Image 1 (cartoon, rainbow, N blue to C red):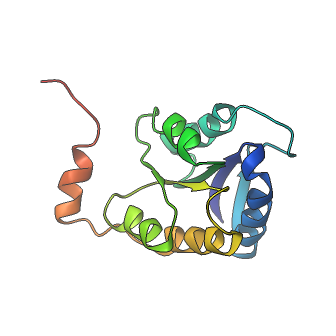
Image 2 (cartoon, rainbow, N blue to C red):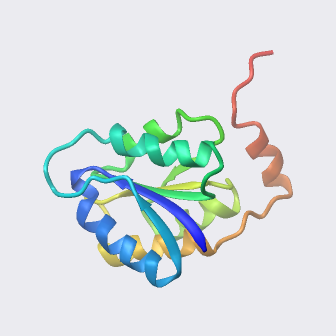
Length: 146
């Protein structure tokens, strides 16, 4: 069974519930790190566990949500081996996988419709990394001082 982790703050809670239902329909074993209602919470508390699962190789892909998508993406990208892409349309979601080999999708719940968010999730999970010239670029993402 395919595994995926997901986490959101209060702004992404409703979308997260709908995304989990979609993922389960598609046969994913979903690890939900919360939040579990619309009470105000701190987004890093939900982005870090998803990113840690990717970092440790427990899962291949994760999904994080907050109001703007920025906070959870910033938090997730603090983890080595994580390439979290903030996407606000279907094409960006596809390109984040094809060109950037993103392994976490960040969704701005206050700025995209639920049908678009679900479409972005589908595209993110269906799209393969193109490799080739993009591989060289992805390998340069982690900053190493010379």
